Amino acid sequence: FLYGSHYSTAGTALYFLLRLEPYTSLALDLQGGAFDVADRLFADVASTWRGCTSSMSDVKELVPEFFYLPELLLNANRYPLGSLQDGRKVDDVRLPPWAEGSPR
Image (cartoon, rainbow, N blue to C red; front, side):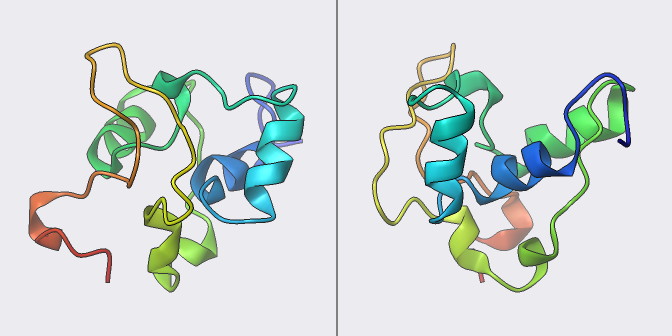
C-alpha cells in the first residue's frame, strides 16, 4: 500500500504497459472487459509528466520497462483505445519533441 488515493503499483504498471500483452488482457480484466476511458490512458508523455509533477493525487512512478522497451509506446496490435475529449485518437503514445518521433 503506497497511497490511499489510488490503487498501487499494479495499476501504474498496467497504465504504462497497456499496449503490450499480457498487460492488455490484465487491464481489460481490471476495467470489466473494456478499455478505460481514453482520457485516463497513457496517451502522451508530456501530459503524464505534467500530471505527476503538478498534482499531489497523480502518484504514478515510471516502470523499469520505460527505459529499455520502446514497444510500450507503440500500439502495434492496433487496440481500439478510443478518443480523447479533444477528438484526438489514442494510438501510439505521443512523444515529446526531443524524441523526434522515434520511441527508440
